[in-house]
Amino acid sequence: MPLPPTILANEAIKTGVVICGHGSRRPTATRGFAELTDRLQAKLPGIDIECAFMSLAEPDIPTAIARLRAKGNRRVLAIPGLVFDGDHARKDIPEALARYSTSDPESDIRYGRCLGFESRMLDAAGERILQAIRCSALDIPLSKTLLIVVGSGASNDRANAGIADAARRLWQRLAPGWAMPAYVGASPPSIESALEHAVRLGYLRIVVFPCFLFAGILWEKILGHCDAFARGNPGIEFIKSRCLEDHPGVIDTLIERIFELSEAKDEATRATADPSTPSILPSDDPGLESEAIDTGDALSEPGAGEVSLVGAGPGDPDLLSVRAMRLLRCADAIVYDRLVSSEILALARPQAQMIYAGKRRADHALPQPDINRLLVRLARQGKRVLRLKGGDPFIFGRGGEEIATLADERIPFQVVPGITAASGCAAYAGIPLTHRDHAHACLFVTGNRKNEEIDLDWEALSRPLQTVVVYMGLVSLPVICTRLIEYGLAHETPAALVQRGTTAAQRVLTGTVRSLPAIVERERPRPPTLLIIGHVVRLRESLAWFDPGKEIDDRGI
Ligand code: SAH
Image (cartoon, rainbow, N blue to C red):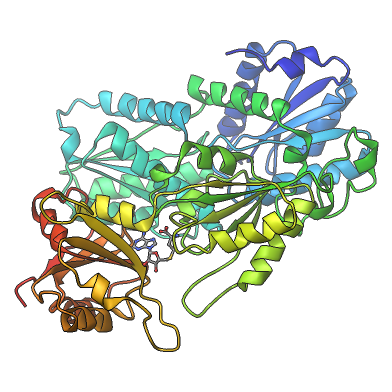
């Protein structure tokens, strides 16, 4: 792996690195972390590297930075030695760095990203799990193996979503019978309930993989539970995988994080973890020096910001565009809607300022004019702002209104399309929206009511040989179906309601325009839901391929 050119070339600012770990009462865990840092040092010989711990072990973060400073490093790159950005990465480490900066205003300290669970880390985890399975003398097929991916369980959903996502990716990669997340901390499912569930499902082998770097006290707890379950279930093989430890994939990912941070634009790494936390970092720029211990808002050059209006797709994070992903990774502020899944939010930089803008039916967290003004204000503070919306921003997303304000205010912006709910839900439900034999056109409409009336061209919607997709149509579904029949649509025309399309909670209710209202009344699907009407719905009988939830098909009713 090439060394970060800025670290090597930039002799004017000598730069050191501190890798910040969690700390453990278990000496083997802290020793393992220190050895990991040694291996990293061996790979980057020209740079001073220290390890530090948040608690329970020495040195603490300020002491490690002071050591780097004593060796003449003016700039320090702090990298969280953590897989996911839970509270430690978002709050505790930035706070420790901020405290240090206040005591040493000459220092220039920058904060990077957690390791995350992308390609190298995924490979590393996969290898650890397969190593553990290979040690078994039993010949049990992978299809009879259940994988439990254990995380520590954070109070913030984003870190927990990271573990769930890791389980999903490992399932895709290794193809065990099933993979599920579990947490040692307060968040459900606990390791005990995951083990109980796994036993009930009848798997012959249960592999427990701790998704941490090193085995601390939490791991001992997990081992205790596994052993108790193994004793009570002699017919099942329990395998405990090693942690990620100093796997080469971990080391390479740390190098990548160092590289990334040394290359990052100044303002990107100086933002705060939490808008309420004082920001870290004085800077080289005398113009910014006086604002160093201000809130995040004051940190960037006024007027240099820009807004990206980005579609996050219908839910499955794998449906994000490459550009959306790239922007998510470097945004300073993210203004997001309710429909953006927590798995997608988990991809943001830990330092990014996260602002929830709504909206649920009848619950607009921020009224539209306030959102428009907020985007302008954040951009004027010099931030790279990501306005993240579910689906596509230009399809029932008010994207046009938001950029109109930006255009008026001469704020630079770009629009990144996303996969709209109609495409995402139709694809994952096995319903082609057009088809040479069944539908030559496809209409997207909204079932939202204005003053109790649905303002739609019923005549146009009732024509044959087309597909009608209704966004926001759950509440009005009975009225929509009745009106279409009144205007001449055959009552046996197939119709489907897709709940939470493309996610693990996807569920598809199918029927006809006559039967669907009763099915929906009975099954009470949870929003968001999308209504698809037309003969193409019937193709699902042979084309359905993604069905995580229970399917209801009552076409005969
Ligand atoms: N801009 C979005 C639509 C916003 S309107 C897009 O292009 O998809 C919100 C409506 O979209 C919801 O009421 C629902 O009808 C639909 N929707 C969005 N995501 C969905 C999903 N995952 N499953 C089903 N419907 C969804």
